[in-house]
Length: 417
Ligand code: EPZ
Image 1: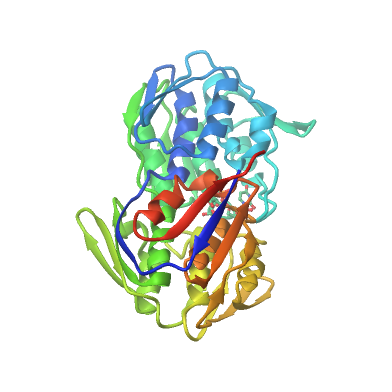
Image 2: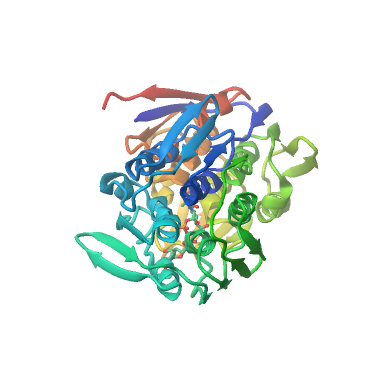
């Protein structure tokens, strides 16, 4: 647990290395359960969520060891049940269901709780597993799935990222053909499909609304480097838009961030795509309107960082959060820094102000915590971002080091438990 002391900072200048994507690494780690061979994930970021999922996979009998910046998995002797404590701590734990069920014919996890941003149900995951032939039993706060899977056509009521990933993994070893209709198209889904194909799965259509999987009898081990973290890259681009300056986001790919880059360009920030990464320079000068949508729409995970940008951008910016029912908790904390924000259900209206002033604020969730650090970079005096919940470490690998290296006045202060 830590908190962050942030001071008003000069324009950020320099280069920030972008880590591999948390939201690509987590499903790929679960995909390692589909084979008895070694799976090596290169450049695995050292995040709390990765450690939590590692503990859960070990509790299923999967061997996991870290070799420098790689994680090596061996699931030769897995069992079908995951540790309930770890499962409750992280929503992505639901992603072990598909691989275990498909490989062993049974799987059980504690129902992953909701979280600060929403109730986070898993009905689409279970609807799809049932279509593939699974019997589902809910009891004692957990869900047990049994059955040998066979291909089916599944229609998702909404293009859920996690449900698409879970069902994609389950279908790789199911007998016959599976079609997932209204599938999510996020780059992390495509990366998972590419990883599974490298293991010998037969998948087509990833990145479109319809994914087709021909089941195979087994999958083999593989070494894989997941894609870059587009949300970390977007967060750092927002930091530049707040302080001005010039950043090279090494490893960031414009193709994965087009909606954010368009919004930043509309606001007056300059973006240049280069072979080594994204160049971002200049401050946001014009207000903007953001509607969060499934990919390729504006990503909900960058709504909070962009709200921090809006707080200091002259004019009226408007946010409509269509994905999660409770993802404006950072607004109240930003208002403690002097921001002018009105929230009405899923709409937030931000009046840019020329000056924010430092205060003690609280990280309510992962992306909200990052947004508060960004706001502190342009708030007079000192801002203390209290992250007693350890949210920021779940998804950002050394955010304070990366911002400090380009001139951000951010210090991490460990809190004793
Ligand atoms: C993934 O969560 C990401 N997490 C989230 O990132 C991201 O915000 C989200 O996708 C949307 O892009 C990981 O990849 C580990 P969903 P996921 O299923 O899969 C509802 C971050 O900050 N829904 O696409 O849980 C759900 O309640 C995190 O890195 C159902 O109703 O997202 C939500 O309102 C936060 N039933 C919406 O769909 C279901 O069965 C989108 O959820 C599943 C989802």
